[in-house]
Image 1 (cartoon, rainbow, N blue to C red):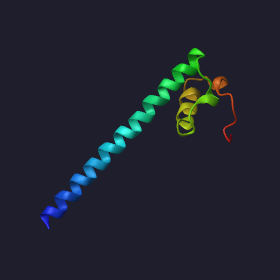
Image 2: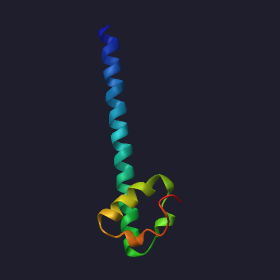
Image 3: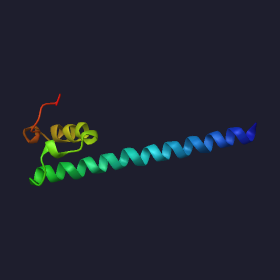
Length: 74
């Protein structure tokens, strides 16, 4: 019984750490795209779909909504 609990806890810890790094990777990539948009090297429409909500949120937080070149529903 203890071995099953330990295995379950290890699996949960590995899953949590994997999710943390995936979330952090997307956050880092969103910041990269935001900086490229601000510099004029990319447009919001060129951001990959999974990153658009985060990039949109960051641009709005920075009061740079005018750099979002497409509808929220698009």
